[in-house]
Amino acid sequence: MLKLVIDPSLSQHKQRGAVAIEFAAIFLLFFALVYGSIAFGLPAVARLGFQHYSVEASRAALQVDTNAPYFEDEAAMLRRVGEQIDSLIIDESWLPATWRNGCTDLGEGESEDEPAEWTALPDTVYGYWRPEPNALPNANPRYQVNVCIQASDPIVPQLVLGDDLRFPPYADNTGRSWVRGYTIITL
Image (cartoon, rainbow, N blue to C red):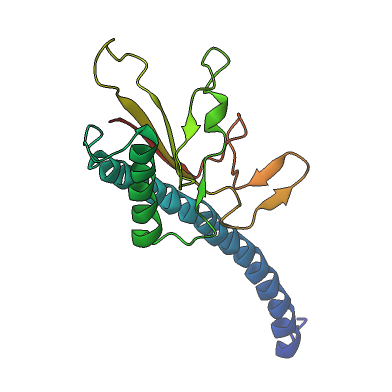
């Protein structure tokens, strides 16, 4: 009978290489899961924050009495609405200033059929206004206010895989940032 003798140190050396390969494969999978969670989670939380603060700023703008006799003219009233929006977004927001930008594309109209009718509110970058399109003639003027906050720069660095694949995506198919919040109210 033939007797085989196996050197135990040779077996352990081969096993170390297999452990290193398994660790590398599992580490890459774990890193991809963690990066994906952060890359989609942080912008999603920021989007909820943008929406929350746009709603709160709109509520603050509703507190301005548009028919008050102490406003000299329409411009003074709109300036006060802009101050209300700005003070709430800047003073009470947890969002860093580098993340907060106004939506600069609202003056272009939402579609080709809709005219470019939004005008920036004075003294704020977050608000736009227009006369109420369905207002009754010979009635007190009514206004629509659009409060929009967006992140124009990426919050988490993008992972670029090829020419067209970016992870996470920061713009929708129209080129607008999907990390934004907006609210339209009527004063």
